[in-house]
Each structure stands twice: as C-alpha cells, then as structure tokens.
Length: 202
Length: 202
Image 1: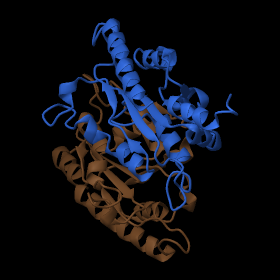
Image 2: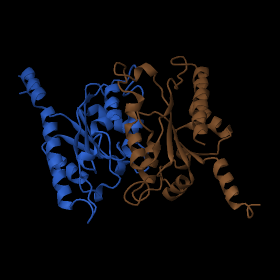
Image 3: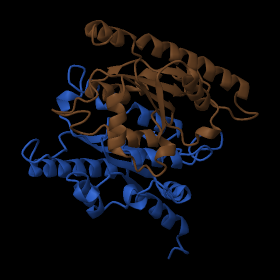
C-alpha cells in the first residue's frame, strides 16, 4: 500500500506522527519523593511518546555518558527537564548533565546547532509557597527571574523556550508542612497541566 | 600581661585580628585553567588570612564531606566562591557543594542560622564579552540578573551578599579568541580587585 500511495502515506505519517518527548529527570532520591515520582508515573501512563531518563540513577557518580545523552537529544523533538527546585536552580546532577552534554560544537558554537528548533520545557516542583516568590516575600524573586540562567541556556542553544510548568508547596514534612495527600494532589494536577502542554506541541 | 590588662588585650585582639577568608574554588580542570589558577595563586600570596579549598580536587566523585565543609564555614568570616561561569551559573561541583552543605537546620530553617552575618562574595571568570550580557546582546541578561539564584541563596541563609567581582573575556582559545597574555593580565587585574575588596572587609 505504501508503494502505491507513497506520497499520501508519507503525508499521513507526517501529520500523525507523535513528537518524541525526552524527559531528563533529576532527583537525588526519586523513590522517596512525593511529587516528582507521581508526575513521572503520570507521564509514563499518558498516551504521549515519552522516554524518561533518571539521571541520578543512571549516573550516581556524575560520570555522564556524553555521547549517549547527545544521541537521545538528537532523536528528541521536545525536552522536558523534570526536577525539584534546589537553591533556586536545577539540582547538581542536572547541572552536571547540562555542563557536560551541552558541549561546544554540539549545542553551541559555530557548528553547534544540534538542538536548534527543539522545544525545552522545565517542569519544576517548588517547596515554598507562591507568595514567598515576590519582591516582598522571603524568596524575593519570581520563579521566572530565578530561571533566567536556564532560559538563556535555551536561547544560546537555539532551542524553543517554553515557560515552565511549576507547582508550589511540593514539600511534605510530617506534622510540620503540608499533608501527603495535599502534595500528591498537587503533583497530579501538575502532571495534567504538563501533559496538556505537551499534547499542544504534539 | 594579659592577666593585668585583660580587657585592653581582648580589645587589641578584637580590632587587629584578621578575618578568616574561606575560598571555595570550583573548576573541573584547575591545572589547565588560565584565569582561575592565577586568581587563586594571587590570593594565596596576599597578606590575607585565606584558606583555599579546591572542591573538584577534594571530591572528584561529588562525595562531599558535609560535616568537614560545615566546620570550615563555621570558622569563616568571609566566604569567596571562585568559579568560571558555566551555563550562566555555578559549575556542577559547586552546585553539589551548595545543595549538600547548606543543609536544613544548618544554613536555613528555624534553627539553621550558622551562616548568619558572614560575608559571601562570588568571584567569577566569564568567557563572553561584556556587551553580550545585555538585553540586545546574545546573552540577553546582565550578570546581576543571572546571579539571582545565588543572591537569594545568600538571603535565605542570612549571609551578607556582596556584589560579585567578575571579569569578561576569560576564555583563551588559541588562534580563535583572546591571547594567553590577555587572559592572564585580566586574571591578575581580577585578583587585585578581589584582594582590595577582601581587605576592605578585613
């Protein structure tokens, strides 16, 4: 059939083909996380074409296989960075991945255009409440302001920057801060928003 | 003598005592650096009371001795973070140090006030030129804007934030970008500015 209608078949493939979504997940202890684990399992159960890489599990001593990671990136149309906000930034393992994988000649520089045109979406669980991330709050700056280094990383690598999907109040400290049910419910809501956003790109 | 004039002696010690300066240096390959090596050796040769810790050398697999690092911090009056700007932020090893050492109950939280009142100064070598770090430049944001995560880390830990000492054009790529002499001269100038700043605190 594809031989008799090659163009129609190609066209059908072209319009129906789902985007390849690569999720780079970073959490020092994902098994004991309340929010990130739920977001990732919801992504996995979705109808999206998703590959999830737990970089802390893959590289516990940060000995990142640069070539393997770059191959995954080349195949991807959309890159999701899934992480808890650690000191207003990505966790160290994800920073290690960024420092090593987005190398000169691959991600930037005169011949470094391998990420050009791919979407990037940060998906972030934030411990503190929304009101703290404002000029008069104890975190002083907005999430948008604190993400400038990541946003500019996207620009230099010619990726398409998408505003982050993020959720406040994602820390559960028994008898102190939030209930487990509250955090889990926020994580499910976060997953739905992220999936909706990804479907809009697919 | 100290027994007959205890108060005077204490007063003398109090005014003359030099501040303890702890330098947390992060560079994946310090021996082959052009700028960071020079800045650190100039600090070492100064008359300041400086302890320099190369965290990439101390912890090549990021297996940071949290207790040892916290002890160093407790003794310090001033903390210098010395690093090359990697993707608009600290290198991964320094992020690992921050994530692990600035722990709940030590650096923040209701009983976490061990860093309160200590000075923090980022000392940064930047590859790109000054004009690129502006709204119309290819790096879009100022160094100040890109450092918000580190600035807010200082605020949450009750440290005294000092504007960074930084120098542009600190990358040397033979026959492509800068000369070795240019980079070394900038590094010496940087060291002088940093030492001057530290002397003003001592």
